[in-house]
Length: 276
Image (cartoon, rainbow, N blue to C red):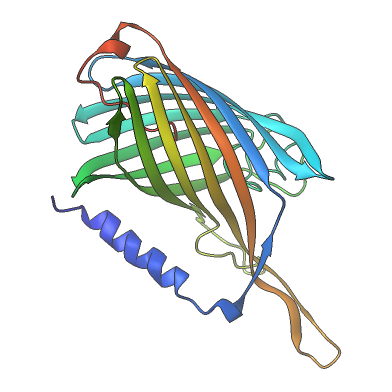
């Protein structure tokens, strides 16, 4: 099946960004972050569904884990064709945690985050190929000085394959990459220029579906925040820090999903991965 032009164009762009000389960028790796989430999903007719998810965010600190934030996610998705769907999402996090992130990326602003999405899924040889384009607006409700309300676009590309183990258990290994860019409608002349892609997330997981009503997904990810920092110079005028900086956060998580309602037992229902 021929893939839409969108995925080919974006794939070429991401490869070009990755091919830039490493010497032009500084990279720093932070402490591990842990993001467990519990989800409840209610299937509707066809593959449509509504869901709610509650997660915690913690990070390694002084040999232990510091739990400092969380996230509530609500969503609805409608399939108008077998391979095409659109949806609406709403995410909420406690006020005052914007410097840590909004439950998806460390450092992404917003306490109330409404959004819309467009999704396409299709076979790619023996694999399932998916692409998800989302637009959100992170509304900053507090008085945090280092953050502001911002609109952003997200594109996620994924590959997975599902196979059956034994009588009922199904496994779905999956790898996905998501890039997020702020939507910059206007920039002041004296404002520091930002990177084209502001956040990236490479995630690998194995979905374990134990029954039509219960599945869990352990996953690992490498999350990156791309910034332009103020350049610092030594006494001879040589740059020693700043410029293009990539802030990496290794992340682990576990998604636990419970599927409710009578449509959970429909034989032709195709549930999405827990990374909706």
